Each structure stands twice: as C-alpha cells, then as structure tokens.
Image (cartoon, rainbow, N blue to C red):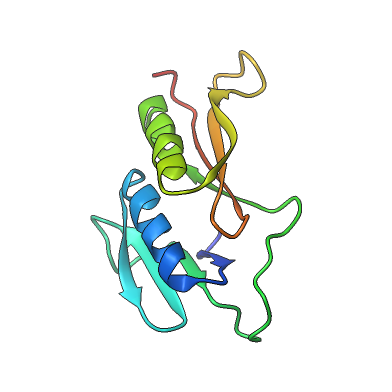
Length: 128
C-alpha cells in the first residue's frame, strides 16, 4: 500500500497554482503549505495526505523520472476528462487525452506533464 506520492519542483509557487487547480477536479485540496512543500488530501478527509509537491531536500535541481508516473484513480470518465482539460489550462502539456488504453479494455486514461515535466495520470475503470 502506498502511503503518499511526492514530486519535485523548481518553482514551488507555480507548482502550487498548477496543482491547486488540477487536483480540485480529483476532489483533493491543499492542506499544508510551507516554504519547501505543499500537501494535498481528500476534501472529505484532510488529515489523510496523499500527494506532495516539494523542492528537493538535497537542494539540487528537481527533475522528472523517465518512465515515472503518478496516477490518480477517479470514479468517472467525466472526471478524467476534466482533469486533462484543467491540466492544460493550468499550463501542463498533454501526454494523451481521455481514451481507453488498450482499446476496448474498459479502462479510461488521460495523461499530462506538469510544469516540471512530471507525468501525471487520471484514470477510471468505470464505463461512464
């Protein structure tokens, strides 16, 4: 079981603005902020932090991992599409809009790159 996920950033203020917008579509809100990181938790359970965006602890430049991806499960295809749309409006880059992958699998995904190049996915197993 994963306790939480963390991605690095080189501009925490910009990253906070980006994640505040896109994670809202996944029912997550920012619950902690300091000069080094921001933490996000479900709106209905703010004590259960699931995601952090942070400046690297070692003070080196944040980089994205090739082949690394953070994926958020959702309850509908509409939420997956909203996540993708919001991510693009917030300055992210598309890595694949909503669609079943593989075709006819019933699993619906969308992918974006955040402002630091981290690959972020939203998906659902629901057919609607």
